[in-house]
Image (cartoon, rainbow, N blue to C red):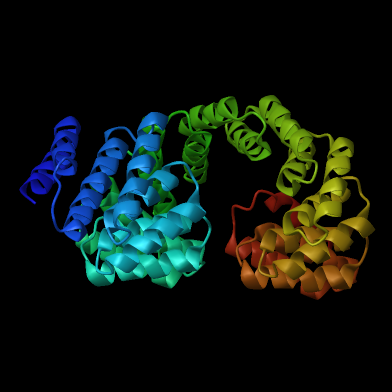
Length: 467
């Protein structure tokens, strides 16, 4: 018994040769009580098997020695749990999970209150895809020892695999209570909270993960996303920048930094990360599109045009890129070319607000008023409070001599935007076209009264004088 204890002590100190020497001494001892002898020899063989495995689990020779000795142990006394446990570990190492599970189950039957056996059983079950069985094993582990290292964390991962986010979140919370320095648990909590739209809670979880493991670029990235979704763009930008510094090789980090700076109208600062994202992944249509947005905002229109073209080439169904390319071409006085891309974008998303508005503007420029009206009416149905779209719809009505509809539309513009001076001007024109001189004089006079410095004041005065 003392030799078994000495060998176990050496084994736990990783003095594997000394451990085996002690166990060999046990094997050399013969007792009159063969039952006790078999038991002692079985334990010595089981622990020798363990010593070979733990000395180098990647060594095929060591694994074979472990299996040989464990089998000998079982032949001497099959009720020694340690031999079955080591067999389970060897099979787990070689990804023979069915054999591993069987060995661990036998070990657990022999020592049912051993948390370590149940934990390793759960690991093999998880890797074999038996997630419900794994969850039961991990739950049994923490029932025996609530502080068992990684048990609650693995229980959380298993619950995620079973798509049970609520139980997963609870498990990760327990994992953080058991080990307050387990940054992985806080990180996983943050992921679930982000998915559930609990951004304030996610920010707190990711912040703790970052505090515990500040060199993990992905932790800063996820913290940045939570801050972005929560509307805190300045802090999101700072966290994205840190994720780029720590993991400059990850294109998503540079892309999101560029996107945040773009939304903050920090166009000059957005350019470098947008370019870096494209360099790291030049097959991402979304990255080229965002680079184009930055270039367009900086007035680098030819470069923006090339970026949008690349985005469309990479993804012919990319609605936003197709629409933006058409819009840019229209702004560059190329309405014919713009129309090709906008019509293609409209095929992809016939109810798209942006493309219908852009098509309306191009058709208005080309004086195809019927088509302009068709698209503006679709757009205004999607965004009834958008005064710019309604004003352009009013122009299409006016120029196609639909004067009554133009009047109604312009009065709606002025209801929502009473300082839209051009709407007063156009309303006056619509009223004159309907031979309503008194109403026109009242509207035009009101315009000059409200805005004496109106840019076309002289023209308004001429119109009033002619009434």
